[in-house]
Image (cartoon, rainbow, N blue to C red):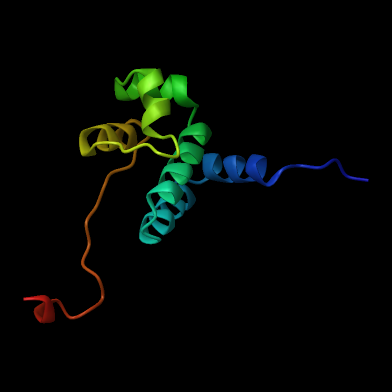
Length: 105
């Protein structure tokens, strides 16, 4: 019988191997529009990219602040979010929805 491997462990390994998959994972979580889902996805990606201690050093953020910022009730500022994403080789991008933008005007 094969040993049990948790979904979380498989997810982290997959995110670690493929940056495109990690970016897609973050984008899907962001598109859901739920802050908690996005923060969970971001925590998972940060874990895959070396963990909170390593990332906090790379992003020049305090480790304890990073844990608070990414907690269930966390509310990271744009500067902190951009520093985190930059530290792991990602960037924040804005794109238009596929709807007719002229209707909004």
